[in-house]
Image (tube, rainbow, N blue to C red; front, side):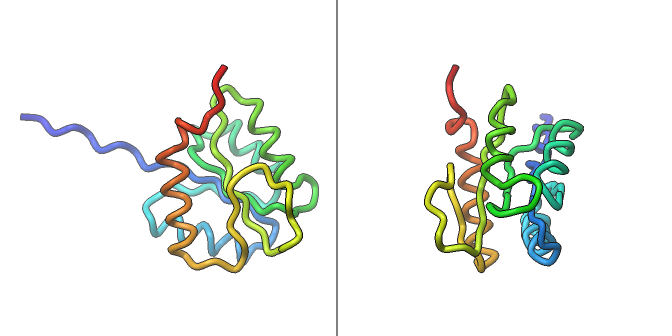
Length: 130
């Protein structure tokens, strides 16, 4: 009797202009078994999504970045046929209009892991309908 092939790991794109935070989040995701892509800004993130060899299942992005903010990145991603869910992260406590789930920096690895698992497992349900 043949066993089903294991599904490939989900792909998570981490976007943050601060290298230490970007590497921290990428390490947590790698340790959790995800395939991880990293970008230093929104423009680089869009290029990675467009050129990825597989679907990006979740984007974790800082809210305030140069060149393109996290919400601007999310708006660009929303124009895709199957947009990935977006998790926003920020150290600012003055943000009110973030268009999606958000973690406040600093956060523990378990907090990030729990939120990512939830968003990836519910990602298909969270996609907007036609």
